[in-house]
Image 1 (cartoon, rainbow, N blue to C red):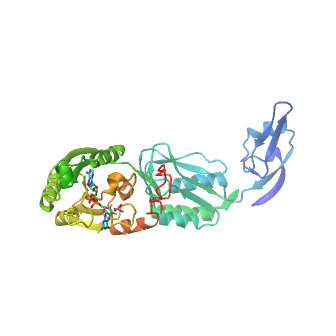
Image 2 (cartoon, rainbow, N blue to C red):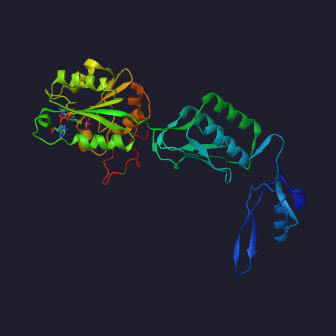
Length: 341
Ligand SMILES: Nc1nc2c(c(=O)[nH]1)N[C@H]1C(S)=C(S)[C@@H](COP(=O)(O)OP(=O)(O)OC[C@H]3O[C@@H](n4cnc5c(N)ncnc54)[C@H](O)[C@@H]3O)O[C@H]1N2
Ligand code: MOO
């Protein structure tokens, strides 16, 4: 990169290394050309009208890339499914979701890109729920020009990683609810779980197709889980009876028919949560906090299941960092640190 003073007519294709100000007395004083601007044929007349005969430019060498071109390369490397890029401004390119869904970040590749001194790529938290039109990531380079070789390495990382920033649309899942609790079953208390769970399912485009009530009876809970599988449910949510009282038989019932990924989650609230599968049907045991607390571990895991992710034990363990709810009043989730480790 070399700085030169040149005549403006020789400047086409070169990069301004200072702002050029336009002053119209009584009307405006502002920037007509910005530092970093690549001069095109059409700019020459305007520069003349501003009284410029010479300008300082950066000559882009053969082995260098202009910041805006580098921004576009970065944007394309980062953008995966359901993500589009904006035009560059001062090399900054934004990634915009083109669908509602779950933001999926290849964090390993993201950190690799950021390990180049002159490269910046930043995203919303992995597994955030995002809306169509929302900015999910931004990227830029630090200098006005950057070595081609670095951008080649950036492209290589992209090739190896596949998608780095993607949005997985929520599936139109069929959900079965099993509300356990003898006191609820007998009508001694009114069910408060069904409306809460139905709202969470419908908010992400799913549908509650079956609701069953059972007493705290292992055998009956087990039968209802199997029935929901037969009905073709993608997800079965089983509420209540998840703790340590003698009547809390839900974990045993789930364990008798499903493959348990993890009982107990490092999320507060949500400690007594259970994640399990019968084939590819997710069977999720939800402790009573899922009903009386605005957000719990369910709000971190359910969107991922709805987007088609298979939850592993490692996924649950990883929730520990950020798994503690601050219990703000009013609740600010998802605009807080809960689940954003
Ligand atoms: N000794 C211990 N006790 C508790 C522990 C513990 O570790 N040691 N953990 C606590 C945590 S954390 C949670 S969360 C709850 C888990 O509760 P359960 O899932 O076992 O819930 P239940 O015992 O069935 O019910 C608790 C409470 O909520 C009412 N309930 C349940 N379902 C409904 C419904 N569908 N509609 C309305 N109300 C419902 C139920 O009647 C009870 O009053 O355990 C802590 N205890
Ligand atoms: O599971 Mo309780 O599951 O932390 O409030």
